[in-house]
Image (cartoon, rainbow, N blue to C red; front, side, top):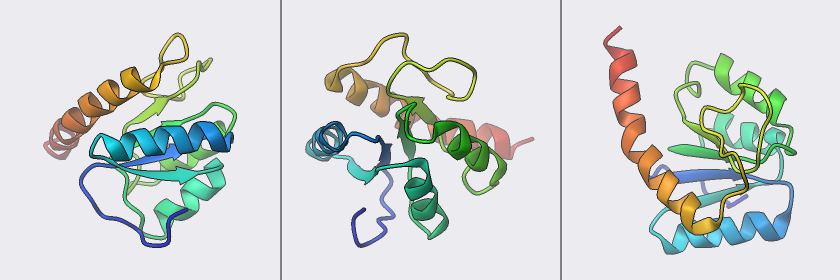
Length: 129
């Protein structure tokens, strides 16, 4: 985890148990103008978020305690509206956005751009209820 909790508009939390994959995704996101925040597990990610860390989108690997993390995230009103994308195929309805196959990093960046643009729309719609 990075030392300071960023509060940037395009902060992307990357939860992946493989360090080289996690680092490659974070580096690519940083190069593309996002702030990639690495987390090795769902527990690390939840600690980051509950300690005041920001995330516009969460990229979640299915092997990184994803069921526990998603359950906790969905039950926390401060975190429930953050879009989550599975970055490896998932079975079941846990992730809001799940590719059918593993995605390459260029495709991942394109999807993140879309999610960053649409998450404010989702929040605005929910606020009107």
